[in-house]
Image 1 (cartoon, rainbow, N blue to C red):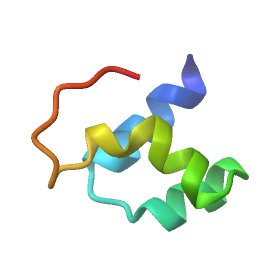
Image 2: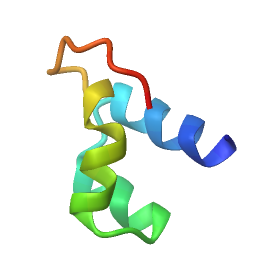
Image 3: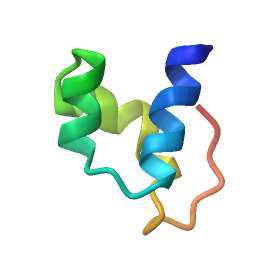
Image 4: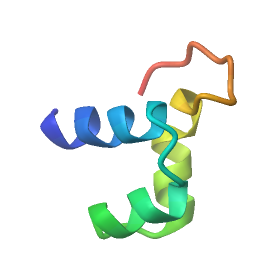
Length: 48
């Protein structure tokens, strides 16, 4: 749960997805799949 909160807060704060992926140790595709809905440029209200 902490990992998801960390990534979501970074995404909402405008941190690039590639940087979030690097911090999590994931590839970009995996990170996008889980957290892109929380991007400030995406008005989606999708949950994790």
